[in-house]
Image 1: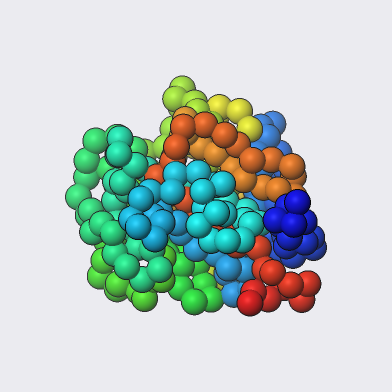
Image 2: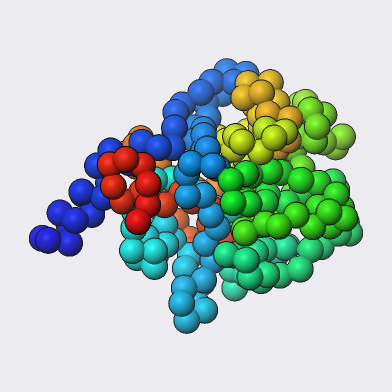
Length: 246
């Protein structure tokens, strides 16, 4: 009982740091969660202390010893749940950058990297990322790059018939704003991309995945279940009432 009470105390108040809400775009429903990278403890999760892949929101919370204010699957992965592309967790590179084209959505160039630094988060086109190699504390590569400097990916078709539950992330040019989105019903790539550009006002956005897309948003009373995941992105809840972590 003490453990449950402690968890409830941690969850009181500070979880509201991440703003999750429902929005409508092109008569379709989405859930978006907005994060302030300078304020919120935004990071990626893959492995526990012995190197096993965590794979679920609950496992992340057990590993961190703190609740998540928000979380989402964060990139494509192999059958053994290893990341398909470049991945950095807490400064340690798990997998290298893949620059060339390839099969599937990941290899539909241009693709990109979601990079989290100390107080910024940015979506960066892969080859630009490779040329600059910013000091990312956490990074995950995925594709396609839905929006780049305000322009949609050239292969996106307005009336595309491939429709899935999809999730992704968009960032402002300065990196002071990161918005994660998941569709509530199957959606095509084009409509999902325009959500970030036209509805959320973000010039860069990266597709994270489809079919397996899941969201943990306790302020909405939502925590999706399903098959075990690979990379996870999330915000750890602060542990005191003034919004700071101990």
